[in-house]
Image (tube, rainbow, N blue to C red; front, side, top):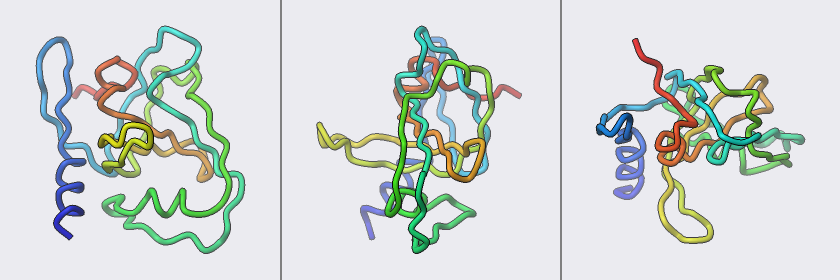
Length: 142
């Protein structure tokens, strides 16, 4: 239980570097973010997942907080995955959930965010520390 609390607390507060200054921002389910720019034909830190088959027994997740979204979307079924194409630059998406996962290769923690796609079968997976640092993801300015 202690590690789950730490993960939730860590995932909700992100320190973002913008224009050489540090800004602490609370990111949570329901917030809206804008896709930034990429120098190539695809984004390096944003992936598009399309669920091609639902098993029908996916675990529920807390739609108010986004907790459990990973298990609900990824536990069963089949997926297509690709890097997000540059045509998504400038578009706005709603946050479905934020959590800390372990990188399969390095074992290091990764701050991950899921953005609501254009249909229920699509999400955008964001390595948000790297996406903000590179300008691939932007906060909406009031």
